[in-house]
Structures are given as structure tokens and as C-alpha cells.
Length: 268
Image 1 (tube, rainbow, N blue to C red):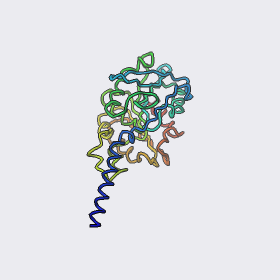
Image 2: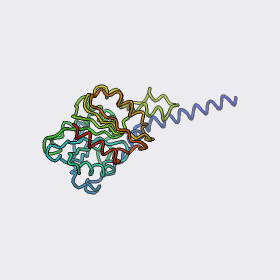
Image 3: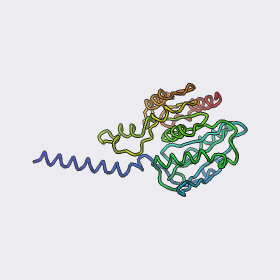
Image 4: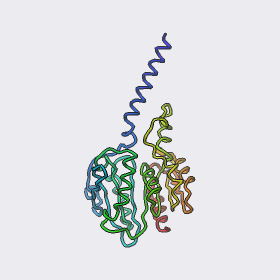
């Protein structure tokens, strides 16, 4: 009798825990900060704010600045933590190099309205790509580069399959959200139930453009092996893997990481 009772309690706790994971899955994947700040308030007054209206009448915040002359324009897709303001220092450094910048705030981030999901973020990214001239106030004269950071690597890579840029930069890419979640929660049937998949390992196979992958060897959020797999799957003839030895999840804008980024762009 005690064994049956114990197994019943274990089954109850398992089902309850899985239910929590299921209902909290959107937050777990997209824990954005909705706090609104203007670029000036965030410390990057050279950027201007633009509001993009989506197909379902949501408002997306975009920070942007045209490139100097024929310099490249970087279309930036941020990670799942924080918001645009948390990337202000990065943006400032890119602007210092003369690059143009267009940074999208996903739904639920930085004052953008709506709820995020793979489906709507994919549509929003396509809308952003088609609105660059409108957002910047001029047609980009130089190359267009997608920069994906963490979660944004899935967005940038998927967008590249339908609206290819001139080059792709992936910072701490993952093979898929499902693979990450399954490793973190191995006791649950994640692969069977998770509807937010972001399968970069599939998208990258169709992206044959110059590609730079940056990944820290001590990344505790997305293991370095994920970056290695994504790099190996890329069919690009011009591809570079920058290993940031001892680097964590946010190591790309270290001195070594920035050097690799600027060198890659200069070589396009």
C-alpha cells in the first residue's frame, strides 16, 4: 500500500511540475523586459526611435541610425534577456565604427506591444526587413548584415532563409530551443510538446552567405558545442568560427570578439 501511495504522489508532483513548465513556457523562452526607455535615456542619443505597426496592429519599437557613406547596416536581433537598453553600449560601439544600425524590440520588450511567439516574431522580422528604407529614412548604400545574439540567432538565421542579407553574424547560437530545453529538463517529453522550436540546425543548412559564429567556451546558457554544430552545418564557403576561450554567454563584445566582428565585416 505504501508503495502505491508513494508512486501516486510522485505521479502527482510530476504532472504538476510539467503543467507549470507547460503554462510558463512562453515566459521561460521570452523573459523580456518591457521597460520602456528612449535611446537618449539609455545613453545612445545618436539612435532614433521608430515605431513599426504590424499586420495585427501591434506597435514595435525600433532603434535605428543610418550608416556613414557606404558602410554596412547591421540589423540586430537581441537575446531573450532584458531589452534594447541593456545593449546600449554595444550599439554605441557599432555606431562609432560608422555602421548603420536597426535594432528590433520584440513584442513584450522595450515598450513593444503584443505577446511573443516564434510565429509572430518571424513575421515581425520579415516586416522589419522590408521596412529598412522607411525606418532609416534612406535606402542602405552598403551591405546589409544580420546580427543575431542568443535567441536572436534563431531569428536572424530563419530570416536569412527567405530574405537573405549580405552576411550573417551569430553570437552564441543554439541548435534548437527544443534541444536546449530537453537538456535542462530531461525528465519531461519536451520534444513532443514544445511549440516554440527555433530550429537553427535546420535553417542554417539553407543559408549560403558569409557567416561569422562567435561563442565562448564557458558559456553556461548555450553550450559552446551548439555553436560548433551550427558552424559545421553552415554550407557557406566564407565562414569563420571565432572561439572566445574562457568566455561566457556575453563574451562577443570583448576585445577579441569585437576584433573578429570588425575584421569579418571589413573583409566582405
